[in-house]
Amino acid sequence: MLSKERMPGHVAVIMDGNGRWAKEKGLPRLAGHNAGMKAMKKIVDHSDKLGIKYLTVYAFSTENWKRSMDEVSGIFKLLVTYVNSDLKGLIDNNVKVKILGDYSALPKDAIKSLEKTLTATADNTGLQFNIALNYGGRDELRKAVIAVGEKVKRGELAPEEITEEIIAEHLYTGSLGADVPDPELIIRTSGELRLSNFLLWQSAYSELVFPEVMWPDFTPEEYEKAIADYQSRERRFGGR
Ligand code: FPP
Image (tube, rainbow, N blue to C red; front, side, top):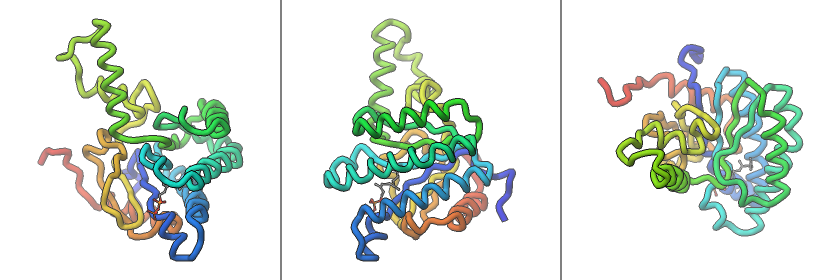
């Protein structure tokens, strides 16, 4: 049984293994991403049911552009299908959607569908669902350094006045952006044990859980197992 009191406020997920899932079944990689999208929908619903306040998914990284054109455009098509077909459901469930990353580089139809979704869900007060798109932790830090550097250049801030809070504020997750607290729990499926440039600053004290299943097989039951693992741990934040 999960404890309501120890429910993580923010869960972040690296949805890994779509390609291997498809390969095992002799299917094209995009069939894996399609199954991954379905798994993601269930996890969004289940997060809401569990009373989790923030869910972040790593949908497309700054490195994913290196994949074949077919795969990249297929992922964006799935994204458009997802936001268009699920918009009503997201609104009905009071879900607020936010994007982490520079989505201006995405295809025009994807930008249009995303912006429609962001606007339509902006005033919702339930689960905040953050989709990391064209997101990279180093790129995010670089952009924050540039923004803070500009403030220093304009004389609004002295270098020694730069605090951790000021840096955090300028990240995609900061109060000037999606305004999300650091994740208590990060889940990466498929048995890979890496963060792969995901939430580098924000993961400083996150608990990491690595279920062996491929992302399309990550069911609400697997999700609850990962949360139970998190709840069994003692978090000390560098103290004793
Ligand atoms: C990682 O699996 C998955 C991705 C890079 C894409 C994630 C996309 C989805 C879950 C579906 C689409 C949803 C949205 C919101 C766009 P992989 O391809 O790296 O798997 P592999 O390591 O087995 O090859």
